[in-house]
Image (tube, rainbow over all chains, first blue to last red; front, side):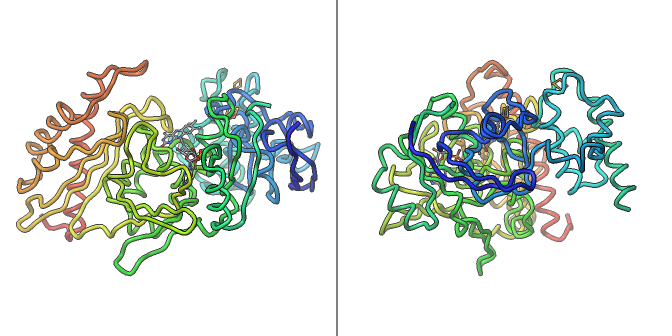
Length: 162
Length: 297
Ligand SMILES: Cc1cc2nc3c(=O)[nH]c(=O)nc-3n(C[C@H](O)[C@H](O)[C@H](O)COP(=O)(O)OP(=O)(O)OC[C@H]3O[C@@H](n4cnc5c(N)ncnc54)[C@H](O)[C@@H]3O)c2cc1C
Ligand code: FES
Ligand code: FES
């Protein structure tokens, strides 16, 4: 095994410290080392979006980020999205209600892409939502129900946040 | 593990980065956004022995206004932050218009201006802007630096004048000349994908409203960003109208670009796209030149 590095990160609000090889991808670190398997891995070259997580609040590809690069940074994965086991995040709730997922493989990446999008664009048009989704592939839904869910969530968030 | 093993270092200072790069130039790679390098490492198409991670070089993440109305932009500035920067919108409107066409938001959140220019993909948008707007690039290695014009920087497919021990540290964007309009447009199968053809256009109005200067630069139609100088020259002295646009588009698409067929589009189709996109870009750039002139036509 090659050289290892100390990596201290905050993941879903919890501080984690590990010794890791530099070549370990953030996606594999989350899934294999931490058991956070909600982050999915589809293509491992940045195309599908399934591995999208928040890196200091910005959506990024976990498959194109080395785990060592998360040292002293904050990561949020889909496991950290809901406020508690009994409650879904409003975007998750809208996906549930509008049938925004079928197999669910793409869902975590889409949620992690669209949560910051809705923060920046609380009242998006349908076309803006479709553009925001351009970096996430879904093989099941045909996207229509995803778009419906996002618009629904935007309305719910606006009502909640006044 | 997907990538092959490598030694890793993430220096805190530019001097240290340049020192390590100088020492390991032959088998080290700088890691900027990683959005081109890491996919190649995941496939093991690239197996650098050492990665020098530039992401701690906060000093290279900046957009600064210069006294002459131009900009200096640090190599480690994320593409996503260019998209949100009012200085870029004001002083480098062509760049501002182009950045949302680069990949997807998640890629732009990591990808850097320096990485995109250094990678020199002929399908990439930012090298086209660098060439059209005559960016100057500051290349450094320990104890020395040189400034290179964008037109001399891109020399071949994924190839630049960067020496192995050199790093691109910042770019200088000259001020936009007065009475100048700009436009960027492209066609891709899906927003965010690499485009089949794209074009950046600049036009400057002269006295009496004829064209004083013009530039047309294309992506995905050769081994580097391709400037269509003859087409641009054909506009100079002419009135900027549908007739001169069509003639310039014909010159550029017919004889100055060299698209090749691929699985998405034939060469003939790409020439057709170039023709149509050139006219659209010139039309938009001309509208903006008039607007910059006070709107009177
Ligand atoms: C799915 C996907 C779609 C994409 N679509 C597009 C697109 O439509 N248009 C587009 O333009 N790009 C696209 N990209 C590429 C993306 O924009 C890259 O981020 C960019 O080209 C490289 O920038 P980077 O900062 O990530 O560089 P890296 O990947 O870190 O580096 C790329 C290369 O440049 C070298 N390098 C980096 N910085 C410097 C420097 N300062 N000095 C010297 N050498 C340096 C590195 O050593 C490496 O060889 C896409 C990428 C993906 C994964
Ligand atoms: S697994 Fe990361 S983008 Fe597909
Ligand atoms: S729900 Fe199956 S891939 Fe999107």
